[in-house]
Length: 517
Image (cartoon, rainbow, N blue to C red; front, side, top):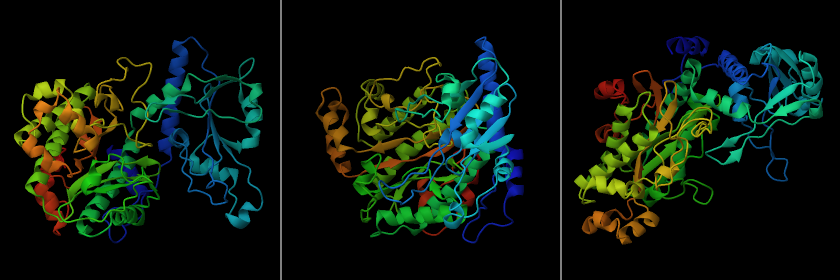
């Protein structure tokens, strides 16, 4: 990791821009060379194990630009994630191949019309793309069939390993490459997806360095939003401040996902901020804010949630709920290491929250009994976290060729995005939450299985509370984990920052070193 940081530092601009302590690094494209080598090694090993000859081509099709419906308004392009992982290409319309026998990587660029130079700028030469993206060969997309046939050293039709498989977060399938002349090739639609997906699960040092920068600039932006939040602002103003900071000072043109800027009762809407609820409520005195926002830098993302009182001071009820979530957050991080199962971490977070709610007289009864009745899912219906990298919900959470991959069916657990054992090199979010969602609370209060656990005199006080979520991005290491997120977490830290204190505070240095920052 130290060498990767040095490489990025040496490639970066001389000094950070005013208004930020960070410098956007230049990208070392050997990051993607290493990703291709990792895939090549994995697929050769797979073919050797299956007694198939290590030959043929991995072939991926990059993303295409899209217009807004029937108009000529071009939407901001973002590369398809698997293609971005292997090549780092930011332009649309490319294809990429890897010759399994020789290890050569080949890019195919679109042949642009002459008028492109009038409207969109210089038409780059093939040699420009070859040098920039560090590939062995470069051709045009209308030459794919001829080039691959010429490169093939085996007998019979060349074999293409195409990307086709289920994303278990979206339930959508990745799109296999299509091009003119495919009838000249045999195709395999089953081998590549699970192998390439598993390559993405464990991050290299160079990947981790980019993810760390995305975390650093996003953490800095979250702190800036905390400082500038005022009663009577609109939620979208908080979103705007975040987007401005990450783009202005971090060069982050893309967000990892649509910003969630929920205040008051909106904090109980798990995916608030969508088109029908566009971060437009006015902040009221006494509200909690739940801000889930993360910047993306060179395809690699961050995913951070901060919760805080909009007026800068926690009430006793806000402190109770916030600390319940913070204790769960810290308990999970303290327990994470290779070999730990993610279902166990989810249950640890649930139990910690339930114990805190019992201490706060919101719940009564035996906590183990509450766990058996799945009461934790009433307050935290989502999963504890997810893999993160080039996608906010990075793939690999459920792979059919791994053991214990049957998705749980119990409330809360069925929403887990992975149930795998942790491995060194994974990056995963830890995002426990506690929400007061009418659609879940009302049935629980009416059910004979769960109504006995509620203190009826207390629970009504939290009906319009909203919710609290605390989310950090964790790198699993050999003997534990590293918290890549650097936001204020303790209530006193948040209050200090919101009253104008610098961040980080000196007193948090020890906590940060222990992974609690």
